[in-house]
Structure formats: structure tokens, C-alpha cells
Amino acid sequence: MSVRSAEDFVALLRDELALTVTVDDLDRDLDSVESWDSVQLLALCTILERETGRSLPLAEVLEAPSLHAVYQLAVAT
Image (cartoon, rainbow, N blue to C red; front, side, top):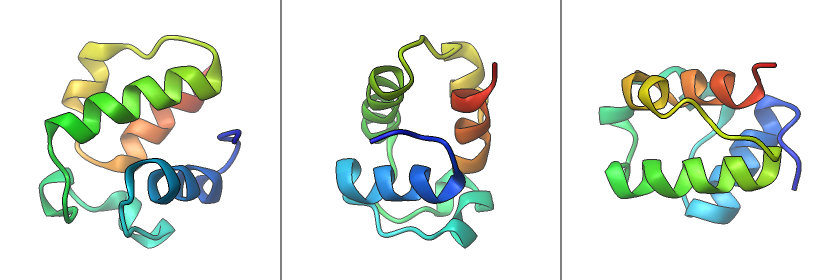
């Protein structure tokens, strides 16, 4: 699976992490995302690094306030 759009990112969240989110949920605070925790964040980083073929800036990921912010870090060039 490639992460080229917000829809791709949501599909990855659903398929890989079993999160029930939509594109509309991406801007919600991470604290308000159902079933979200630090283990999910680490798993997401691993998955995104595998899918994009590059490392994510961990310090910035840890400061990300939303899934959209994580997505932006993953697709940044």
C-alpha cells in the first residue's frame, strides 16, 4: 500500500492498525482518537517508514497533535 493521499493514509490506519477513522477524523487531537496510544504511534511510524522507504523525524512525530500532522510528516519531501 502506498501513502499518496489522505485517503490512502486512512486506509493504512484502518488496515494496519484497525483504527476506525475517516478523513474527517485526521484533524482531531490524538487524545480524542479512539484506541490511540503510544504503541499505536510507534507502530504507525514503523509502517509509514516501510511504506515510504524513508525515516520519519521522530521528535516531530512525537510532537504531532493530530493524525493529519503525522501524515504531513510522512509525505513531506
